[in-house]
Image (cartoon, rainbow, N blue to C red; front, top):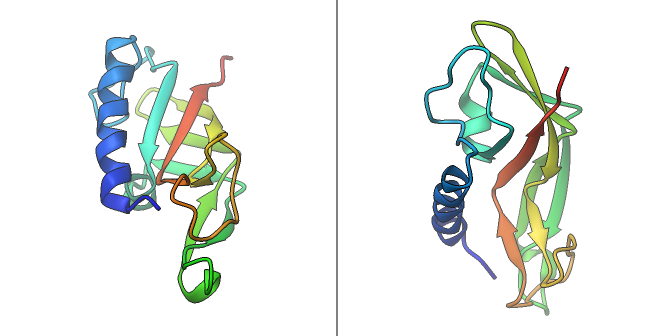
Length: 131
């Protein structure tokens, strides 16, 4: 199972890869009228920033214990349909295309406990909604 620290390390790499591909991580300076097409936002950052609003937030719980006692620990994620960034020039809407969650090796949400191939992602991936 992946720890939050490991997930954040991979997330840091993901941010750098997105930057090389032309996308901008939310923590970078944004120019008015020129929002990034793709963003990747850590859940703890989204939780503590007043300029980010989650649309239709809903909790999702996954077992985090061993295969013998799957619910001795749990992961609780907050899913959303959209992220709204309240910026100086206007509000920017981003459709969430990757939820924070626990995923199996095929990239599907997983309720299996004790599987070392699962990955826990503590971030949102989202695409800009044009218009």
